Length: 442
Image (tube, rainbow, N blue to C red; front, side, top):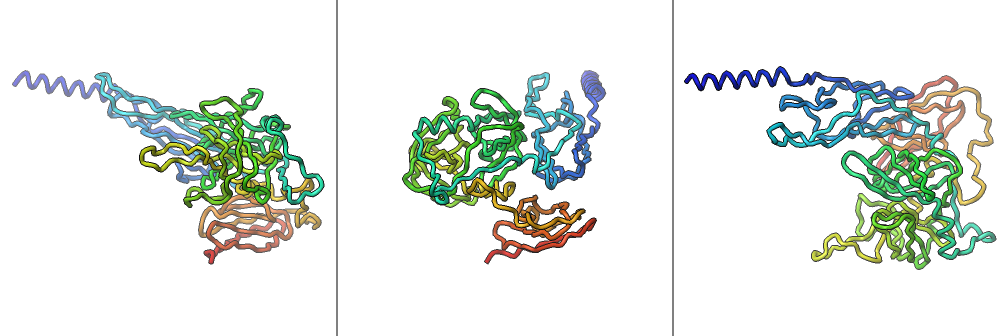
């Protein structure tokens, strides 16, 4: 009995010592600010507030706890900060995973640690990101200066400098893909799955120079993303009108396959143009099927016509459905998302881009704009409705935009809905709320 008591007392003393010696795991505060303030804060896909924003986490989320009594973070944390009229900022707030192994060798699983208790995001205005000019070409609209078809080696020599290797990494994995510049001001296109939820990637140019490429726009449904590299004078590729793409014409793919050399070139023909053979709501859009090899790592690179115009964004290869070879790639069946889908996104930021060297004048260009401005708040029953002012994409609902005094054309658009449009007179120093109601498409 005495031995039993001694064991109980020793166990109690040991337990008390563990509790007293365990590191304090009082709550600590994570502070998120932005310039300008008032930006929406989204943590792991959930809107939690606006900047300046504070949230309390257990101390064990910042510093590893050494006993089973401390709180631990069992997943990575990502934050997205965005505001109407500004390019969003996304970042991973955690480092890990780490293995939690006790002194006795018992594994308590994986954990992550918050790397900072203060996040300061500097948001950049959309018009500063999407500057420069977008270049389109249309062979059908040009009858005199139609460029000749180029020999493959000449085409590659001209186009390759505009193609970039993209490298990404987070606490769990690293990956690579391809992309290409569409303006000389550093706006580049790639696939959304190459961006992979990262706030930025490393862009490696043909000469080996490494630059930061911010992810400034992502359309996961279309699997397209836009990047921004700071600088001027980048080589860029013009985008073709899909109407100019013909079945049977020669195309060239340039990219950076994971197990191959950089700037790999493959050649084939346009096998077909249209939606994917098995319609998938996760893969909408118009695709170009080609027998030009598109390997892992080629994703996001350009599919080019023999005139040097981008006709598609290399996206995926067909997989074998034979139960004897599940998941094997089918040679000769590759897909690129058409330039039409990329242009639909780019036209949100470059509404005046046309297949001509001279941009069409804005509908309001000849009208005198009165002095002053007013604020227009645009809300909708369904969040995420796209808003266009005078033909230019300005954001998604809810949005508050400042407009010069005068008459403006407001449009609201959403998939599966009828577009809504109104002409709105904006008075100096006024503040108006517009509530578009979009009816279902017939």
